[in-house]
Amino acid sequence: MTFQVTFDCADPVALSAFWAEALSYEVQPPPPGFDSWPAFLAAQGVPQERWNSAAAIVDPAGVGPRVFFQCVPEPKTAKNRVHLDLHSGGGLDVPLDVRRARTEQAAVRLEKLGATRIEAVEELGVYWVVMRDPEGNEFCA
Image 1 (cartoon, rainbow, N blue to C red):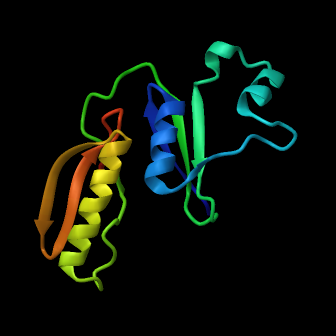
Image 2: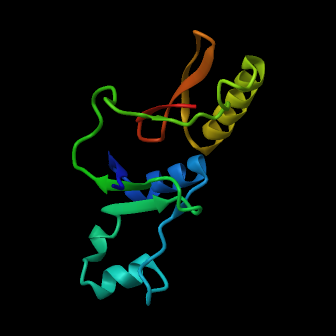
């Protein structure tokens, strides 16, 4: 069984660009026979004002799940019930000081992409940074 992760958002194209960079993914290419998503959408008769209603990113290695972004009219109003953990520090076999440094490097990179740092947490031998993506969705680096 396969699955995708879906984000409700206001700007699917912009949020997909952020997460493509954050996860080292790529924007899903258009279907065969089309050189761009606008060309495909126009051929399907999708009105131009709806071209930013969805976007997707994929793992170029084909290992990770597809991530889909869909436009919804309502804004985010509460804490996510599900979030992504990026495991930027490495596994528990890596010394804590190395994981901490790697996680901090990742957090700085993500801030440059448009994320917001909320807090750093160290607990039970694990270190992570709680962050928000450009639309306010919480995740951990």
